[in-house]
Length: 75
Image (tube, rainbow, N blue to C red; front, side):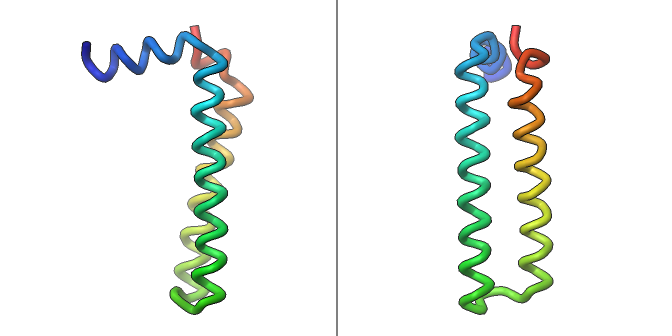
């Protein structure tokens, strides 16, 4: 079985699909907390922080959109 086939098989189960996306959303939010910590500890500049934070905001927004429209992704 190829990776694509396994991925297709998993997507049949809406609840499992949403659970994985929810886990991903949680991980992305946790990363934003680490970014906040890194900025406050002066491990990165404000400009670098803002770049990463914006990317994670977009990732989270995309995950939420996929969760909200899970019917489009699941069979």
